[in-house]
Amino acid sequence: MRLRILAALAAISLAALTGCGENTTSGGGGGTGTLRIMAPASPGGGWDQTSRVAEQALKAADPNRKYEVYNVPGAGGTIGLAQLAGEKGNGNLLMTMGLVMVGAIEQNKSKVTLSDTTPIAKLTEEYEIVVVPAESPLKSLSDLVTTWKADPAKVSVAGGSAGGTDHIVAGLMAKAAGVDPKQVNYIAHSGGGEALNALLGNKVTIGISGVGEFAEHVKSGKLRALGVTSGQRLADLDAPTLKEGGLDVELANWRGFVAPGGLDDAAKKSLTDLVTKMHDTQVWKDAVAKNGWIDSFQTGQQFADYLNSEQARVKGIIAEMGLVS
Image (cartoon, rainbow, N blue to C red):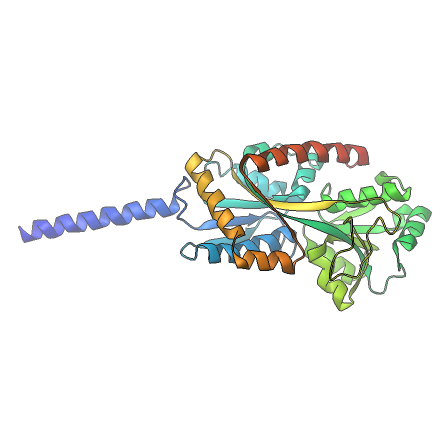
């Protein structure tokens, strides 16, 4: 009798352990397994930075859960987007994305689009900054415009992926300066880290990226800021706006989270609730302030509607700039 009782208890324990394992690895609405965050770019750029800040804030929001950030670089995030599409129904996966990806989808004529994802949250906005190496003879936007007009091909512009925010800013600046946007000598990089190396190595004329990626190097004197894409000057950064420099350009980049398509309601709610909790942590708030980001949190249908409007807007800009090959 005693042996039968022990055997029954062992069976119950095994069943409990098996059930627990299923819950932690399930791609459904359990929300208890390791949450993976894909940064669809090389280390060192804005998506990578946002992903790793989010990882720390998520740990503060729910310390009992495990988190993992990994990189899938290439093609403005569309390689990562294609991988995300293959994870249909997986509720333990988020991908950091933003305006850059919207443009890259158009530029690369990607078969996978944001309609194949589940929108979770818009997180931040960030203005762009235009910089030159410290040794550059270009001291102002006026110098840049003069040089650009003289020979557009000689002004090499380092930035992120083709069709992304940096590329759009370069095109808008060229148009405002009276230079044909199609003549912009734009050199695309898969991450902000690569563009930074090109600048520090004096291999390019100017660089364009998010303020948070270049600000510390401007403050250290390694780079010089020619202008920012904000409507007004930014605090703690000695740089004029592009409008002050005579270029009528104003644009904010943005970043957010999407999940694989095909999520059930429970999985979508679990991820949205967790990201909302992350957004409310002091860790996240401190990072937003430190990096000069703008809090622009949206979830649910509001973010889904925003994505739809951005896709239409960016498609128009890219066509106007002649950035689609």
